[in-house]
Image (cartoon, rainbow, N blue to C red; front, side, top):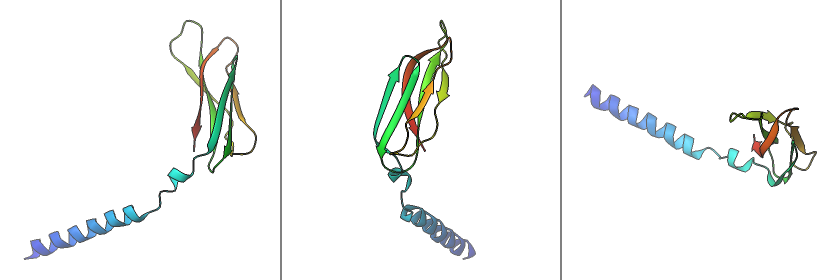
Length: 103
């Protein structure tokens, strides 16, 4: 008898935890900036987002000549509607790709 009661109580507790987790709001999905543009120029990546909440950052994939391993360089974290986030590859590196990331 004790085993059945213990199993029932465990099932109720697990069900309550799962139901509570499902009821939490999905705020992370709403925090991403929007209306974003990424531009590149020689060794520089510039990113700008117009609206939304949260923050964004420019990312540059920089390579030394002859290397296939990138060095990631990061711009400043910015809020939408403010200043752009910019980052540049260092002297002797070449820019192959620029993008943004969010938090």
